Image (cartoon, rainbow over all chains, first blue to last red; front, side):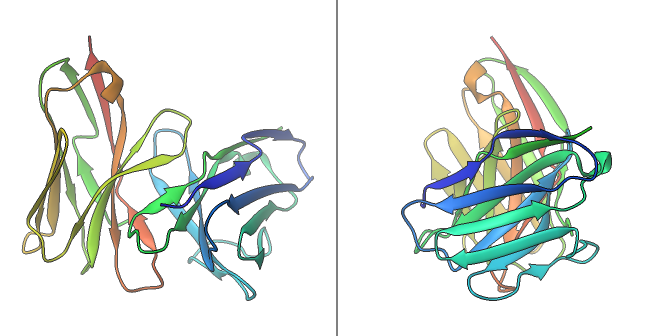
Length: 115
Length: 111
């Protein structure tokens, strides 16, 4: 599988500010990356599919203006949480589907706390 | 959207015992995968079973798939304290490679 690096691992921000989370595929050119959100003790909810060089595909109920996704290169996708509110506090995880490996490789996640 | 239901939601066993977790899903699938997540961490891929397979083994892991019942089970044999984690099933289909997760089972293995 691919090697995926996600940064930062933890971030605390003030309400109203924006936060950018990076997801890098270190050894694999990923045309597609996926962004998930996870609440405590809950499962992962797919937010959007990030497509290199084109617009992201958002799942129903996910605000595209709130969660901006940019996939400018084959190795980097970014998720920007704009005008963050406390209810945006969550664990955000990216993943990459790696080559002939049908499984997915996940980043280590970003714990966002909005105060 | 989430389509997988897992049971039990939480499971506590003693080291050396076997742990069985079940997963049900709703739509047609190409494959079903199991992942492990340690608290506050990313997910680690454990095993994948294709829709035309019924059983698969990997070390102490055994996965079964019943497409007629839309269900799968993960068996961890001879459990260890280090197996303590949350376990998720996830289904993949042809829709853009999306992976949809079940609710997860929180496994606690006591030494």
